[in-house]
Length: 300
Image (tube, rainbow, N blue to C red; front, side, top):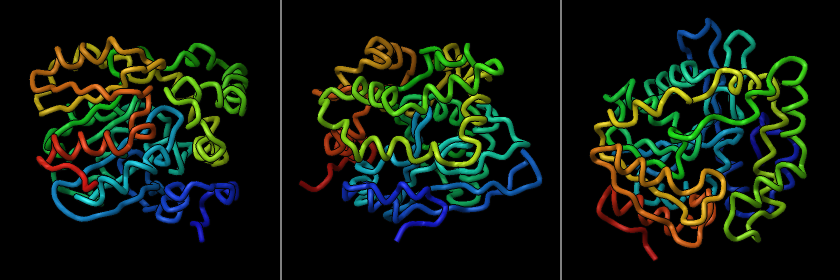
């Protein structure tokens, strides 16, 4: 029923969108200059049409973040949800340290292998920073950019300062704790009822993957995307900035900073929503994305 590379806890999923996405996840071996070994790279792809949309998840997340948004976008165009290198269900190879540069390189060769045409690149939270970094380095691959409650101005994960052996392992075990993760989930949502058991399962499945601890430690010790703030103003793509009006993770001040810094930026607020509009208000979020991207809203 589910792909064999997913942890057995996938059987605990109960929401129809979660189950459908789990059944749709694939893995592709991607060759990159990072090492001689191909990287098993996890993704989901649905729909058809141009330009395609690629979705990038946030810190310590996976493509399960897009379980509600992906099918809505796929009704209009080809849509990809991709696990970034070192995250989700993609391989964490010991010979490849998880850094922003490695993430960008892996993402480029994934795009080149699987898509190889200009796309709309959408990033959420840390995935927004990854999308900005990718766009600035590979403008030929990106037609338009979408940022949802994006990192870029904000500093990297606070856990970074604790990633010194042996504290690194202890810090990741703290992050693995179900009670800690539930508190983060409750803070991310405006409507606390959405921090359900199914949501907790989706958010924790990737913790069971090999070398999760090591990958998280490597990325946080790298400093993450703290180098981006001064580069945001150089973005020359049409950029949609979506932001939850009640974001308690990153706050709301950076939304206006993105719109001011990006010459072709357009800010749209998502009402009654916290840090995760793609999960909390997926229909509204999809409508704003499709209307801005294609001039058409989703079917009611």
